[in-house]
Length: 475
Ligand SMILES: *[C@@H]1O[C@H](CO)[C@@H](O)[C@H](O)[C@H]1NC(C)=O
Ligand SMILES: *[C@@H]1O[C@H](CO)[C@@H](O)[C@H](O)[C@H]1NC(C)=O
Ligand SMILES: *[C@@H]1O[C@H](CO)[C@@H](O)[C@H](O)[C@H]1NC(C)=O
Ligand SMILES: *[C@@H]1O[C@H](CO)[C@@H](O)[C@H](O)[C@H]1NC(C)=O
Ligand SMILES: *[C@@H]1O[C@H](CO)[C@@H](O)[C@H](O)[C@H]1NC(C)=O
Ligand SMILES: *[C@@H]1O[C@H](CO)[C@@H](O)[C@H](O)[C@H]1NC(C)=O
Ligand SMILES: *[C@@H]1O[C@H](CO)[C@@H](O)[C@H](O)[C@H]1NC(C)=O
Image 1 (cartoon, rainbow, N blue to C red):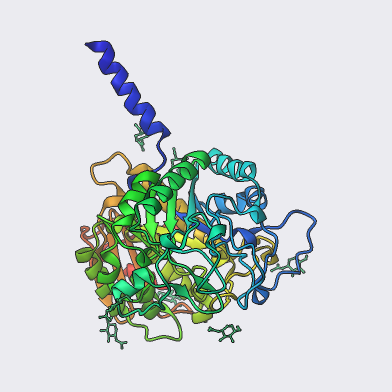
Image 2 (image 1 turned 120 degrees about the horizontal axis):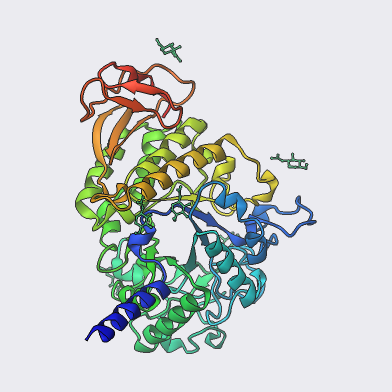
């Protein structure tokens, strides 16, 4: 009796060991997002030749990313999200340039040779894991790329028009249309896979299962998730057997975003909170703290699990924070919100450098022009990561780990917000620079009078009841 039980336990452990990371494991991570083409060049390259407005390849590869992971790890990140690895459009240049970003899929069964070989991708994965970080890969399955509405389907993974929806332009007020019509326009069409077709479902399932196990991928970021019928995702992510976080592009509407989490996907990128943060903090802007508090309370009601949402301020589709806000203090406040409230913080490469590119393609700057300088923003991110990693690690085995403790709002005013998660109180203002003594946020804590608190960013101590916390003005 004993031996079979032991063996079955062992087998279970081996199985879990071989399995890549789950939502519970991702909850404590923090993610650095990379566009592979723009992260690093081989040593000795001319660093001056990359102009994002030219929309062409600048020369970054999986190898050059692997050789420059210190920049990410030293900032305290514990996961790297890389742009898609699937083969991209091999045809002529388009009015929107070349597929340097990786999102214009041709044959998914092949890797994108622009970024390296299978061995290079394997070496990147191994190096990321050697550093105790997780690898997240961006995947595009909603569509392939073409230059017309009548492409030659033999070049794609699914080689017959019967595997695709027929052309129609997306009507964003109609959910069916969002799911079956084609993204893109007549310059670059994006033929839409019929993800209800059993051959497409089984083909994609085998493909993702093999990709994940071959390259030991720990999680997937799913492009255009809301443009696919929801029933497709449980089969696909089940086959992948890793954490799946979907792109559900949108504004403040929490309901529209939240319906994709739970039965459909493990998690979603938190577009409503991003929008709220821009409205609460950016200068110039409406400085509307209510947008933030409303989104927080709706999030609690509507998401299945706020603690695994992807919290971001920038990405490859959005203007850089600094393109919308002149004051770096607003970035610090909004980033602190993302690190200290529920969810997984994500920084887009270059955010640590204060890049200010407006929308696509200007928000895909080469990182190397920064010389990977340790900027004040980089150091600030280091502090946030260090503190959050400490909270994650040190509370991992208690009954309510910090990661799953629910964010509780303590105080709000038109000038800011104070909230608590676990034993950490975060006070944020939208007053920007220069620092001022702001008496408009009277923070009520659950702590007794005279309890000593420490400002983790400055190491200063304060005492509950002394009103000294009001000094904590810029964060
Ligand atoms: C929504 O879009 C679908 C697909 O294009 C179309 O068949 C349907 O008629 C549309 N519904 C409405 C109400 O417009
Ligand atoms: C195609 O691209 C050109 C050049 O960028 C642009 O002027 C035009 O509006 C685009 N056409 C469509 C249908 O979007
Ligand atoms: C602030 O945001 C709230 C919630 O989104 C909205 O109802 C309100 O109209 C906004 N106020 C301003 C001044 O923009
Ligand atoms: C990076 O180094 C080059 C060459 O030394 C220099 O010209 C450039 O100003 C530096 N850029 C930054 C952002 O430090
Ligand atoms: C947290 O724990 C992991 C795993 O033991 C370790 O790799 C990491 O360095 C720790 N991080 C911090 C900030 O202590
Ligand atoms: C939590 O438990 C894990 C697994 O037993 C152990 O490796 C880790 O050191 C513990 N962490 C702390 C902070 O006690
Ligand atoms: C804020 O008030 C403290 C104590 O009164 C004072 O020492 C400090 O200089 C003030 N700071 C600013 C930026 O006004």
